[in-house]
Length: 339
Image 1 (cartoon, one colour):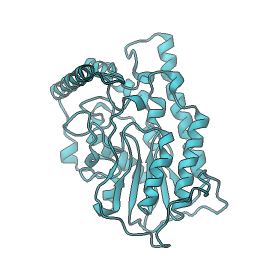
Image 2 (cartoon, one colour):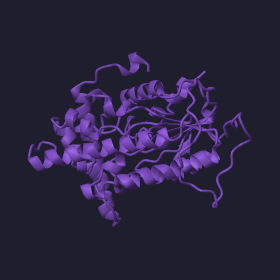
Image 3 (cartoon, rainbow, N blue to C red):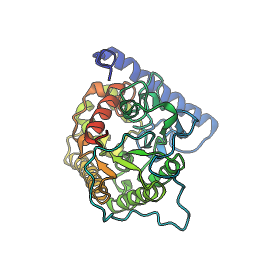
């Protein structure tokens, strides 16, 4: 991270101008939707749950294909007859350090797409992505990878049930390293009963890892813990403009009625936090079944106490460029040791 660039303290007026601009953009979007008679949710922010997400197609940072893994011929996508579910390995764990990967793919949701991290609201900003960005000290930059060997296959709005599809894309790219940060949208829904059950979350994770394991036998995978979405409420619920933006549909399970101290609302927030904790326990357990090739960050990102400066000026929910730099640092330090 370039401290001179990202370490500047942002002033309240700048946040107010940006938040006001975002609310205006949301109002215009809602008006346009009504005028054209389009269906779906109106006046809501991407990044809250699947029905609210901007549908941005994932793209790599360059069109050139990365080098094939050195340990074997280029991997092929698994056939329809191949099992896609993840099964425990009987091999002993390898301690590393491991050969530095020559290519990588990042799987995930709006966080990995860098949503709302740039100067234009309601847009993906992969140049700021903690995983693949070239405007932060991302995982890809730390590995010294050329842009032709880096792919951002994440999709804004994705939940764990999208992992298998993204994994198939990574298999087709023949990458040697895969990062996964996914699960916030499984907890961030309009209602609690829409949150992904833990058993389904685990089955979907196993399916996605199975695709990677079958299609890229030598791949290494870093699972990043699901961030503590209630931390966002703790940091910013006292900000009037944050509350105004959140009211447009951002993560209502966690951020609805942000000023309420009623027992029902306090308990609801705790249940959301507990669900995220359960998701992270699944990541830890399942990753441990693939020793030497899967690494969990140990909850580093979930435990980090993000501050206002780490949040987007636009929505007070997604990471800012500074926040992306922090995630990259935490994930890198908790990840594989490379030669």
